[in-house]
Length: 474
Image: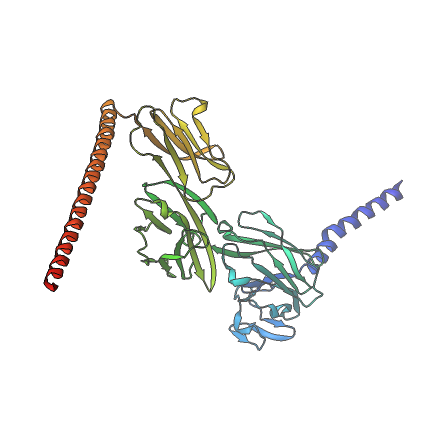
């Protein structure tokens, strides 16, 4: 029993020795120092007394040595490095991919070797994008040892995992294609790099700035005729702290194939100063200047003001745009005016362009019955209803059971005296027409008689003239 107990003790001691001593040492040897290109890294020279002379080398080439003053070596990173006088750690600035390798800290017989593994992460367009653009991410690595197969996970600015498409994969370079960006994707993204051997677990952050609109790509706005309409495009350049200048313009066309009219152009400087210039006098509009917004005001919108209003941004010969489709609704009556008793009129509700499949027009009489409702069919731009009695009628534009806009038409019954006036006018008109007809007939008969009399007198004169000529000849 004593011998078995001694064996168990030896096994326990051996396990503790592996866990406490050998495994951490092996893990430390298998875990390199990680550096990111463009940033700085501090390589630690441990257990060196402050007064001792220290020499840092890169692959046997001296970087710097320090005793009372610093001696400059000839290694590639010498001009970008310095030794901390207290800790003797080496600080390398503005890391480059070629800086990867083995660094040695020497002080007398004390020697510490550190393997530096460098990653370089680049983003297409230097991280400056327009909405709907697709970025590419390139991750490169360099080391003095065999390059590991990396596991890469991307997180967007909302800390959600993004699934990229791999365009190229080698041990040295990984090229990833992300999804189309939206203006809300601006912010700090994270690239998480992992490897089992050597042990690597590192986050690399990078900034993404997406210039664009806080509007959707295509927005539909409904308005009633003669109302005031404000069209707005909200830009995000201040929110994302965009430091580059860009330009833009606002265009309008009534139909898809119609002529494009430039309403205004604008530019935003690198300082964020916004300037607009009015370009068109096609119709009356006002430019409003809220911060980070392009705003167009139509004080009294007409039916022919409808169409597509497109705001376009331009940066480095790349473009992004956002459209607002303005749909105008109007109502009319035929014949217009008060409705005589027993007569009919047709009420027409009309929109300037075809509605989407989930929208329709609806006429309804206030306090009316189900019979007093008329709905447009799909793709119809107008709906008509025949009215034979006075009352208030409303036309609604409904999209997905939501009443977007409404217009009313009050059908008034003509007063009795107006009816008598109309009857009297009709009779008077008829009498007048009859009188004029009689006058024309009488005048025509009289003119005909005068013409016949003139013809007879002319024949008589001719006859007398012929008789005189005969007598003279005899």
